[in-house]
Length: 255
Image (cartoon, helix red, strand yellow):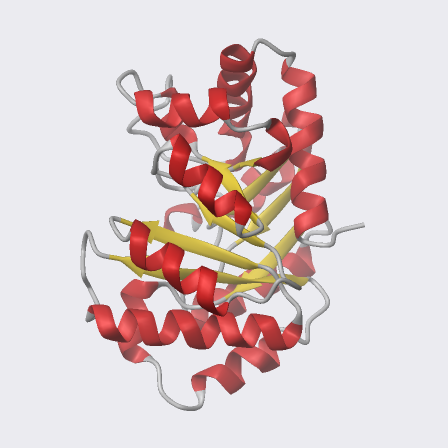
């Protein structure tokens, strides 16, 4: 029923119970999970997970935090990783001006390079945007081909910004923070943006939704995101699950 469109099940916080957790997901209503690459190693790990479990898919890419580790051969490495048929996207890629773990100009350079790789391979992009809305928007507008899809992961902007990203062919992904008591901005996005443009995610193991805030997040908790969207839109939980799942399958070309 549910598609968690953004998880990091290869994260070390799952090392003690990863297989047990993953094997329990279907009985908890999670039909599909996209495990996200954040650097070369986690991209490789995502592929290995996708090979082991039929309902897990993988993306490959390098998060802005880690672009300082890249060199001229890195794009070739990512290109080679995409040859696995369970790889459905390039990501997560983008800009993070909150932590600034890599120089901003270098973040931009590798964001653009990875978008160009996605254009070449006709794969959608999964975009990380933290405190970098304008630069993220401008780069997507200039460099993303119309032939590829895009999702703004863990969206933290306004409803008006969401509408502008949608005009560029992007989906908006809603995380567990939508359930936080004072997060009026994301609730407004949910109310104003049509369901046909939304995905849902956990970003496991981070940002667990209420009532599990502060705990380790996992894909089963994406149900709380779907439930919050259903409440705010005044529609059924089942409808939210159905449409967001189909949106993600369409974006990532999963049959």
